[in-house]
Image 1 (cartoon, rainbow, N blue to C red):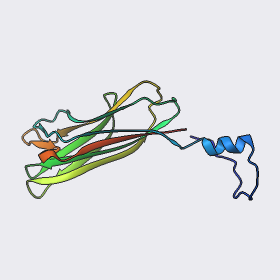
Image 2: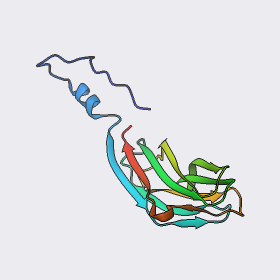
Image 3: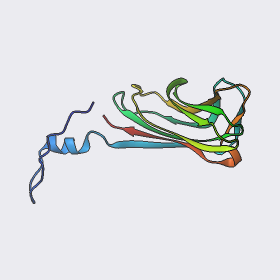
Image 4: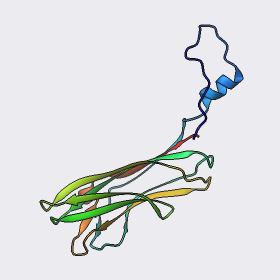
Length: 160
């Protein structure tokens, strides 16, 4: 967690900021970089095993204490009623968040899975974020980016 700043509630015209106040202004919670990845390639899955959606982005954090704000949007198409699809957000192949889409009433359901999370990768190495998906029932088939719908992932590095 970032250290709170000690800035005055207001500044007077002509006031000179100290070096510490200037550093506080420059310091925490700035967006240092933004990385975007997307796909419009339709992918089908008829199993209960996770499969890549093709929605991926790679970011190299500048500090191990920085956070990554991840915004992943995955269009899901379920052709069968009573379908369940799990979207998994992964960092470096490790699941870090999930979203479950359900269609209990009608076939041909188009839904959008959105996952927003603040991650702490604690690394300065290139880090891959991606989404994968699977069915809740192996007798069903689901699709992502059906009919060239856009799926995307945005990575924002936030200074600590």
